Length: 538
Image (cartoon, rainbow, N blue to C red; front, side, top):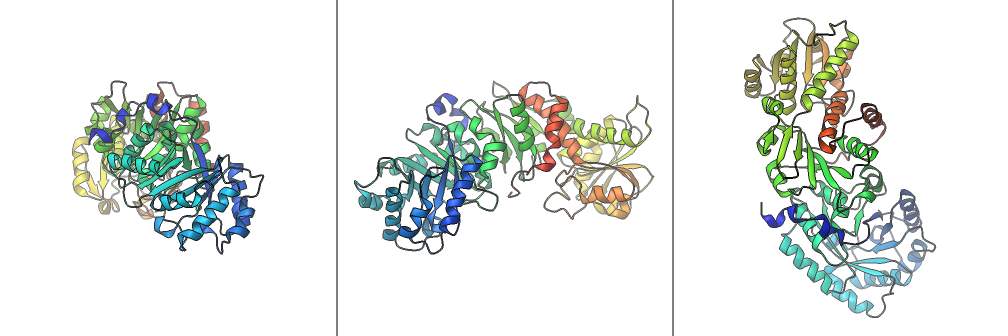
């Protein structure tokens, strides 16, 4: 990875000169003028700073009739007027002259911002020469729906836009991988004029949340899910309430969950609320990562201080860390990465404690057990899955004295882990007829049954009758088909949400250096069922 693309050189001091706080802008995309005016009011109620009025979304738009309605004063929010043509990703299919006249009229009616595309900026400037009100700022924008150019090309683009006489530079690109966003962060932090710099789609999501850290003027958040004006746009409520964007600044530490997918994860809700509850200046975001080593090398700044690691990167994380905790190394999987002040990456595993203790407590609550001995001791413990979570469960169960069996869709993978643990290996097909004894424990560590594939299950209901205890690491939904059918068969069931909470407690302590308040953490976690998770877009 070229140094120019790394955010290691982006310092809080450089970002601090960027000026006022980043504004949250809500796009109004209604089809009728009065509805658009209502959306502007709704955006104000959400706590937005400005509303983008997308005139190209209006049906039968007549500027002289409709703009006075939309821009009527007093307005609850400043207005950013955009009339985006189809060739730049919008819906307008007419000629530029009519479009320009509408934008000029919006300026005359008091619009605080007007957006025009770089391709036609010079033409528009000639039209409005001497006619732009002093209180209206002109945004000149460039959108790339295919890729993110190099840092050098982006810098040249900024210069091109500045040369048009723009008050504000806007560049939106598309991420083909998450490391593309680092190039935009570099541009934001070094730009000497007001700039909006965003990277579209799921791999560019962090640009929308972290832009305040690097001095971005504005970020977009939709009025609600389904009202997005660009790919992977969060809602304004998520930006303000979930990510606490008002508090993100140059000194804010960045944490997050690395995975593929990550859209189902409740970790951002849990950790951001936990950080807020103790006054810790940090934000926790989802990182959709294809190449773990490339990601860690690119986001090498000390401000990217720690990561949760989920499917499919837990095993690769062992190789990517400079140091690995002995237990995590023995398991062969890392779910927590900490970047020390010296830049070294240290890997830990909090999965095994979280899962095993959850299963033990589930058994103790339903069976008479010896308080001095693990209720797993001597029991047959079947692990479905041979990935990072499977390794953690197998290691933990063996440490507690269980007899561990590994089942996996691919037999070679099952055999590899079984050899390490010292137990037999099975395919999932074999597992259907595997019942050497009663009272067995089953632990699913695969993603089978995870949202949106909620009707899937790793094992038939008939086969579940041999198990006394069933655990599922999947926690979206909280009650998976596996757990529901196991309960119907009379088994004690343990939700993956309990493992999630317990492993997250361990991560919180690694992230913050503070002892976790068990009661407070669980109070935060208990609200998860009543709140939206991250966008299921990934």
